[in-house]
Image (cartoon, rainbow, N blue to C red):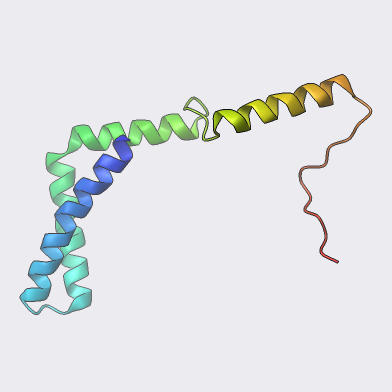
Length: 102
């Protein structure tokens, strides 16, 4: 959620700056570059807490300590499959290959 908030703050900074630079007839490419740099600078200086929270949430998610992205039903299905495989060690499960198209 922190990443989404920080992204929305950056977008809310970028959009009016971009509109301003287009209105000043800087050209599309220069307007994008200027608005992007100014939005970055403003968010870097004034929104440090939000940036740190967003970075922490990303780090938590990608380190494996975050909430799983699966629904409760998917987690339950995976647990049932794991128990089935543990109960039948002679069964080989190949999850790395995709079925071949005929």
